[in-house]
Figure (cartoon, rainbow, N blue to C red):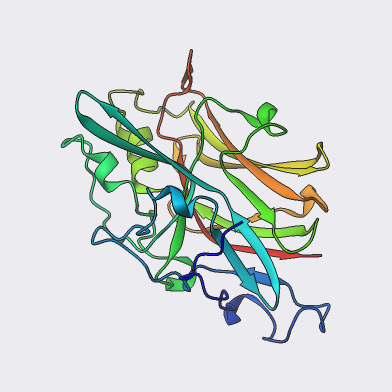
Length: 262
């Protein structure tokens, strides 16, 4: 596993814990990762190494000596003399552009913004997550696409994840696109967080990005304690608009911070 030289030990979010003591010395505290330690961004405000295979799975964050890894993979395919780049998993972003690019059809160039426009508690940096649209929660035991892993010990106890829609995800559901229909009040889209330990599912939690005509546009805490102690969390997406090749609407979400214990 590589450690990105730009990923300094993650900062503790004081507003989200009782004090800044090392959690190993204070059982009332938890380990918290926000993403403000990432500083390498392109002019379009996404992670500079998003499409660099040398940095695959290098998104490891350290807090008081404990570490978690956020999966990241990328690929480049040449077709007709043109190289097309793609990625899955997590990518840090500091984008604030909330424009609706549906009419222009240029969402791939603008896939980087969380709906709140900033991170949790107004922080500059957050993660954009991109799931494999062909996978569901039933694939959790084999999926390697969008995964949070305990990097310093074999297992950890997930506590809370702060999540919301990205602009691309939100507007693809609200407006429709060349790939999916516009959602109605009966449509839905959800994230599933599945805990996995030694090849066994330890628990699962759903969070709806869209349901009953409403969409997640603010950072919402998701209680991950039902996942129990596990070695990794596999994140998948499903929606009511699903076809032969999986979910049709854009399979993006945003992660503002992650809290865990042992």
